[in-house]
Amino acid sequence: MSFEITPGTIYSAFFPFSDLSVSKKCPVLALGSLDGHGDVRVAFITRTPVAEESGFELTPDDYDGAPLPFTSNLRADKTYFRLELGTVKLPLLRFAHH
Image (cartoon, rainbow, N blue to C red; front, side):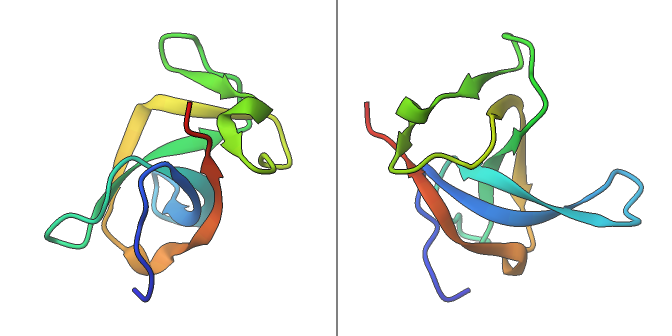
């Protein structure tokens, strides 16, 4: 990988469907930096509304700059270690510092 992963930054990544037949590109929030194995924990961002105990809707105030171009929800209950960092693309945007 030719760039650093910065916590609080939204990246585009490919994730396989549960049956592993197809991958889908989706935005993810980096929750930390790369670990010693080159992995990073990310949280899914989805267009699907989520229950309050599972996550929350992202508002324009949550971003440092322009928000994603669609109503987005962070899935705090679905974090994942990205093992294939080649599928993580350059940063899309940053979260605002509150």
